[in-house]
Length: 232
Image (cartoon, rainbow, N blue to C red; front, side, top):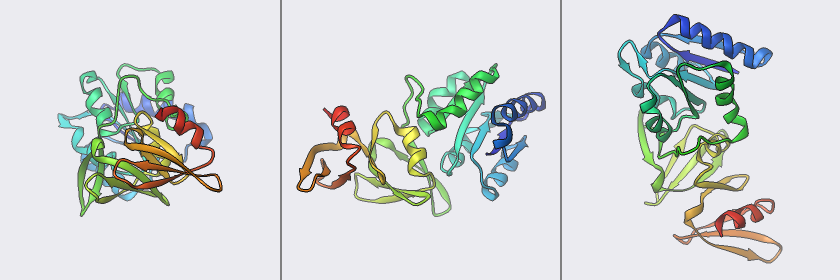
């Protein structure tokens, strides 16, 4: 694991670091502390990461300025903040979890576990996906998204207007964030459940999901039953 902690209070940053080292043990490859957004942004742009632990208020700067860049990347972002009133907005932007201060090691470990258990935070739903486009970060409303196709370590987002956008997160990571409204129907596809018009069974036990716009998406044999149960 490669982890970046963005926190301006040295005492809290060291406490997060100590807890993180205890949680991951020998699985932790590197852990870096940053006390400013500019320093953190430079590190994010030049290093491979698995998690960023981000405070939303560093020396009076607005953490959402960094958050939009952070959530567009391949890694997961966890917010650690005393500003509980910003939790809903943070989840809408696509953070993995929001850990309110004060917190203990058990709560921090729960946040990390969301990356593997697909556990969702009750009452919170992703509303935006941040993508990098022409060197800038653009926010795509989830309501405009039809389905997502895996493309190696990246994903392709297919929108209602017929356009396609590239996202740095893998299909597995997006599945962890979108499990409330999307379903994995194939090893290469995530589909918005509300956009499925019909499930088609063809000869040779081949299954297809017909979307409301007429597109056909393949359904894996092991995913057919799961889709049918959630779709009906």
